[in-house]
Image (cartoon, rainbow over all chains, first blue to last red; front, side, top):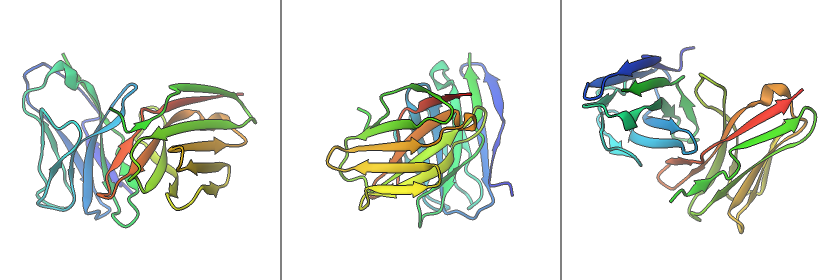
Length: 112
Length: 111
């Protein structure tokens, strides 16, 4: 059972470069989310999608964009990476009836 | 301003003793609270939850207590085991089904 798959696992990126973090789920959940984890700040929501074809902004959306062309995939794009975007990124999906989130294993991104 | 706060960044407990992790929130509209556990290099995993209409939920060694008047919840682990060593995040859900997370508490259970 795969659940949530994220790629890449880690990446070092030069500032100003474009980067897309990939996320795929096989649980047929309608809702998907992108969080970033920073020390002392916990998990902060970047963008979310309640269903295919719709997206919404979370707590820290600036510098990021998402798309939801189908139920399974929810890529996160950094159009022009900056050092403050150095973080661990977690993709998640949820069963809307319970609200429980299922997380991927994370993508560690370092922007130099 | 953080709506969900975990004021202790770390906690060290002896194996077999009780671990108590605390969480405070400010938004009285939160209706559901969850605890997630995270090991290094892994994603967070769901541990236990509680509805705002309850004050206690127990699952094996894990119990979550909710004090709505104080806007405070706590996670009790008893007895603590070395395998419980991880970062624990509390989270609160609003009417829009969005979760807001606390900053996390790193628990270390010493053998």
